[in-house]
Length: 129
Image (cartoon, rainbow, N blue to C red; front, side, top):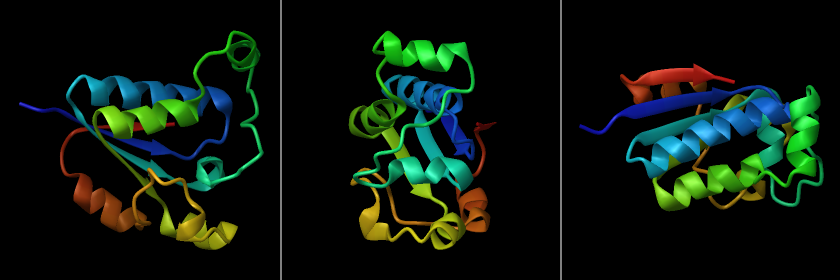
């Protein structure tokens, strides 16, 4: 039986995004279905040509850059390419931030609202970062 992991990302800190991406990639390549909802402060990091780096919350966030840990963007992309993962941008956050669907990374699905996302995910584990 395939398991399902649902991840909700609202934080824009490097550590939270990194941990969410590590869960998503590991679960996806291990055969689990993964669904990620990107909203609030997390969403802007999934816009093409975004030059901003997610701020480190603490020492680990700074060390990840120094030690060349694969960045969260890369891990989320791997989750989609190597497993059964889908990343959904929050339609409300896109409107508030003025982000167009055409500006999102190619591995991001069509925007959805929170109500639809919650009704679509069904059962499975939910994690929030």
